[in-house]
Length: 104
Length: 270
Image (cartoon, rainbow over all chains, first blue to last red; front, top):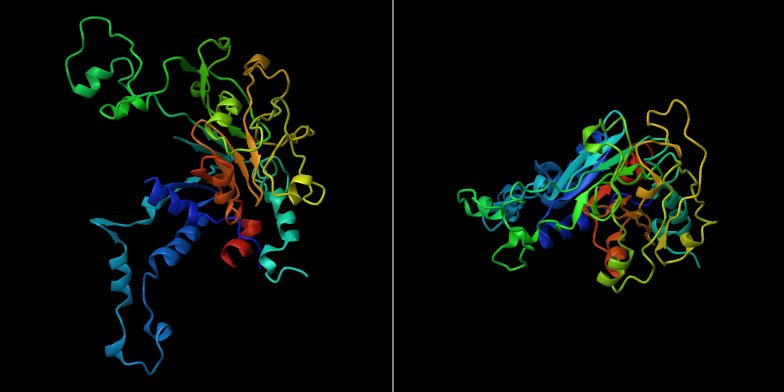
């Protein structure tokens, strides 16, 4: 275990829900962006696909299993807006020369 | 008795803290060894600056010289309230080699004229000339009365800095008071450095154009740098947003994520 040095979740929520702005993360590469997107997708919106075998006990009746994917999609709606990661997070990459440009 | 949660051991914080400073040469640092720079551009001047009424109201251009009145802060004209003050202009001013954060910011009109070309006319990779922000020390103190430390620190403008502080030797590392960073002088970068070497005779920036930027070392880690596009924070340890809020600082909207090579385990678990 160690200390998380990428605790962007609360700042992202602060800016999105309070300031109506997106957070800008300056990252090294597309790989880092993809990982952050995957983490944020999982923590905020839930999994993209539901694995019934992993999420429910083997003997649990199929009729009683909730539609988790439908629930997660429902909670992604704020009024008429469907929340997307791009609304909350933006990414700026360092280029090959190690330069990242941040604009207002 | 040691803290039961190993995540929040002070030793870990002390070991992590140098990696979140823009001025360190730690493998996790994004500035020196990793050769990372951040260029910050100011907000572009809207096209209707010279004639706001024509653009906003979609009316024909005036036949007479438009009068330059101070923009009203009335809610009926919210766009004009966003315009920069007419007493400022954009001028190249400063270098921030220790952080490699090149900043573009307004400068008062009464400042000495710049003898150098604009950064906007040059390749971003060929210069680290910056536009420094006018000092915010007094203004920031008035705007944020809760800030309990002087927001004024001098950043060396003619030499790279790599004086990574050891967390144990750093008095600020053990305290909970946000500390201003004044990076020590460092040896010049290696010849194979892809970044241009800054010397005292760097022609792009003269000494009288130097201004100060504000760096704040947050108690929980990370470094807060005030720029013209808003503050930028290097490293995002947990709850550092509280450090900013408690200190009366604006919450940064731009964050530099440390390199993944050395922190993948901590951040992503693999």
